[in-house]
Every structure is written in structure tokens, then in C-alpha cells.
Amino acid sequence: MARKDWKTRRGNLMAEACPSRLVLKRMTNRWAILVLIALQPGTRRFSDLRRTVGGISERMLSQTLQGLERDGLVERKAYQIVPPHVEYTLTELGNEAASQVRALADWIETSLPVIAKHWELHGTMPQGED
Image (tube, rainbow, N blue to C red; front, top):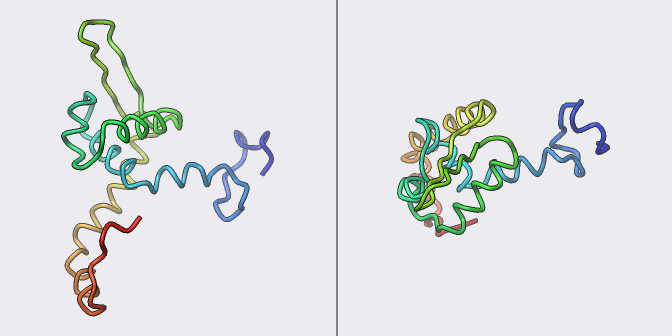
């Protein structure tokens, strides 16, 4: 897909050069999914997001939020006060994305017992595979 077509044509994830793959890469990142879900209930501060999304480092949260903001899924609002106060909110597009990944997250959570039985059948439990 040519660069000029990005704004007027639907993406094609199967095409190697399609920029929609960049969005897919970000949207299938576990941290992006968890941040979108954490923001679904409403606006949150950085420190609140970090506490909510267990295991995420400050650096990774910052990078994830920047990427989601660049894609138009998250809006960042900084208040010029001391100490600095920054809030993050899902955009309309971000709410749509969060609903989609929330459905996947719900499926994963409810299907975990069945998946775990398959791990047992294969004699292994995944260890931090990325």
C-alpha cells in the first residue's frame, strides 16, 4: 500500500508493507492491551496506571503510553503545577480498541483452566515466553 493511500484505504494486515502491521504489533503487545483495559473505566494518573498494571516498569509504561498516544488511542493531559500532574484518558478510538482487547482478555481468563489442562498434557507450563 502506498504511503498516500494510508488515509483513504482500509489496511491489509496480510500485505508485508502495510502500515497496519505497525498498529497490530502495538495492539498485540501485552502492555498495550493491559494499559487499554486499565484505562477503560476512566482517566488515570501515571502512578495509578503503574500500580494497576502489575509488573510493568516505569520505562515500559511510559513507552507504551507514548505509542498509544501516537496511534490516537490515548490522550495525555499535563497540568502545569508542582509537582507535575499528568492524566491519561482513552480517546473514542481507544475505547473501541479497549472493548476489542477486553473481549480477548475475558476469553483468556475464562479459558485458562482448559488451557492449563493442555499444558499438563504436554508436561509443561509456559515460562515467560514472549
